[in-house]
Length: 139
Image (cartoon, rainbow, N blue to C red; front, side, top):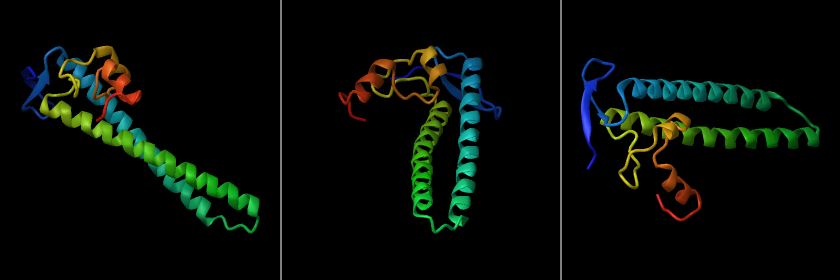
C-alpha cells in the first residue's frame, strides 16, 4: 500500500522513507520533532517546580488559596495537553522509523510537505484533519 525507498538512517543502517520526502527534509523534520519534545520536557520540569512552590506556600487567606487552586488546575490542564502532544511526537518519530511518516493514516495518500513543516506530528492530510475536528470522522 505504501511505497518506500531505502536510505541511510542516522545510525548508519537502512531506514525506509516515504517517496516524496527527501532525506534532508525528513532529517530536518526529525530534528524539529526532537526539539519540540525537549521543549515539552523543559516545560514539564518548570510545571513541576511551580507546583511544588504552590504546595509549599502555606496560606490562611481563602482568596489566595482559591488562586493557588486555579494555578494547580491550569498546571494540570497544560500538562495533559503537553502529554498528548508528546504522544503525537513519539508516534511521528516511530512512523519515521517504520517508513510511514508523511502518509495520511486515513487515506494512505501523502500529506503535503507544507503541512508537515507546519505540524510535523500530523497523522492526517488537511482534508481528513478538518473532518476529524468537525466530528465527521472518527479516529
